[in-house]
Length: 180
Ligand SMILES: [Zn+2]
Image (cartoon, rainbow, N blue to C red; front, side):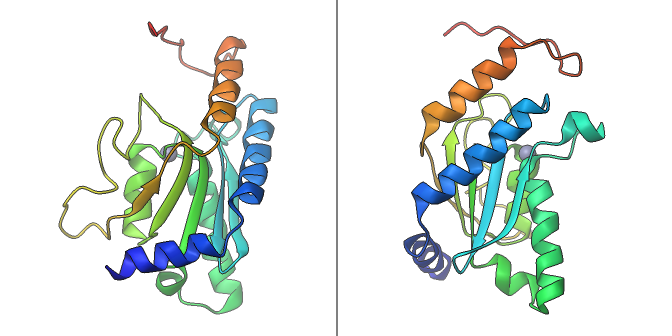
């Protein structure tokens, strides 16, 4: 499958450890700014072309997830570099601390991003299998399925989420306590 070959090649050229360091930094920055700690990077040919963290509380806009923030940067980067968005997106690897939600997973599909490496699962909103499987569902006219690689430095992502939910956050919905 062509997209799988691209995904493998993309990952092969990328230093996953280094990428994880950066995404963790973005997530930590979100945490320090009272946001759910999610950070991400989008890498195209060894170059970071988009990076983002949650900006939902800051902007009072529930769609400003890390992936959406990074996607806006990717579009700007394509525009500045005079490159075609579709051909760039088809070669992007997304690194994100938490499994993309249903909204973001749908956006990634529509943009034909072939591979997503994430830390921990998103049991409440996950769009890559936890709640819905947007990433691999057979859906007509909704972009292309993408490959997910989960569990990369998951514990660090979980620790940050736990720290966040322990803090008092006036903007956050009341945390639901879950039995482990
Ligand atoms: Zn999202």
